[in-house]
Length: 209
Length: 242
Image 1 (tube, rainbow over the protein chains, first blue to last red):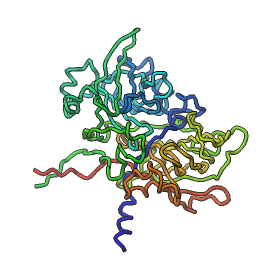
Image 2 (image 1 turned 120 degrees about the horizontal axis):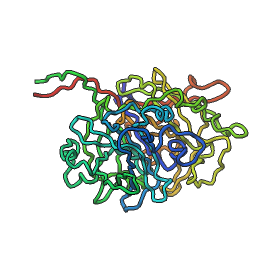
Image 3 (image 1 turned 90 degrees about the vertical axis):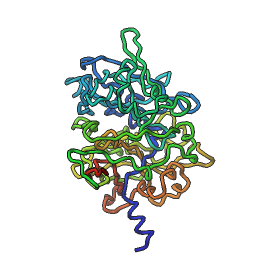
Image 4 (image 1 turned 180 degrees about the vertical axis):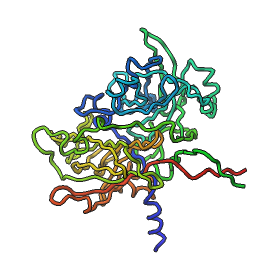
């Protein structure tokens, strides 16, 4: 067997390469949000009203290297519930809504808000008891990214826990702020603002997860 | 000296960057302002912490896997019917069971239903171009659809995307998430497409489906096989140098 053929066989099996989600994902992945006639298994609501814990909105804008808001990104999040446990997230919102009220996984596009925000309705996750501060796992996908990016949301009112968090501590000190969502309260709603900067001096920390 | 660590060491295999595009790939112009520029911070993924969502019978509709039927209004969609099927496995060849595959694509004319697609080609009233299914106990999946057309885009002069189908998968864990595109064998546009070419050469072939008579339905639809390999549990015990 020639070396070329052996090499081809060796390389034919392996991780399937990632490709960009492209500009046209909306009717396939976030169809109800964008008002296409197809249901979607995940949306921006992770916690229904009767879910235990502090109800919060997580929102932000994704900025490109020119500082322009990106209107065709898709954001997915996965998080523990208010007691710090990862529930087995369900793709069936109705089933979840009548049980704990908490889904654990959410997805939204940035193309339907006038300010290009992503907005998730969820509860603030509890500490997992592993020494890590409360956090939310994030996937960022968009046209112009051939591979998606992983990041994390930490919380501005958890300064003590954040200071002890081993993942945050592995991040260069001057970049840690890019992972901390800022808390505000208005009209009885708790909002955490988490802008994502793909590039530039405020470039968000992304992980090789 | 090498010692084996005991216990449930279910780390997820890392992303194999020799199989994936870089974030910044000059041929694909949109990457220039959108890809992260600073080094990624390493983070280990452990199985059991961030399991994929579960899907029940209510998650998938009866026609969700059949794009030739799931959006009919007044007739059949136009175009060449095709079967897209294959297996989803991890890097050790183990089936990835009961995992969600979401699919979206252009119609036979190369036009997406999406509101921002301005390509001057007709929409098909009987074709949406979106579907989903779950893998079975062997990791197998199967879609019935219409072969998508090529279409022009603005990346460079006379730029055309090869015919392709978008696929989104979860796998076992948050870290095994994959969004990819499947291409067709022998497409002359592959050599000019920066999205395809951004993938390291040795791994590009994994993005191209195989035509096969085994999946072809006689007198009805051509069959293409596209197997997908996701990151999974790395069960080799760790060996730590003391």
